[in-house]
Image (cartoon, rainbow, N blue to C red; front, side):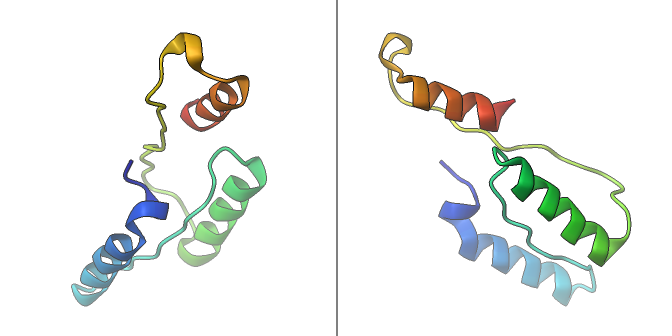
Length: 83
């Protein structure tokens, strides 16, 4: 999968490219399945930028296993991130 944990260098490079163009850019990684992490990320963002003008929710995970073989823990993790 592609996410911050697998593409940190690319995220930092994109932010640097934006800053070089004069566009304010920050990286706010968090575990969206954890309410405290998500709330902290929003608070940090608001402290830096003041308001949220647009929001793209694109977090998601999937497991490469048959539905009948998914463990309860895996199922809960997918629901926690994807919903």
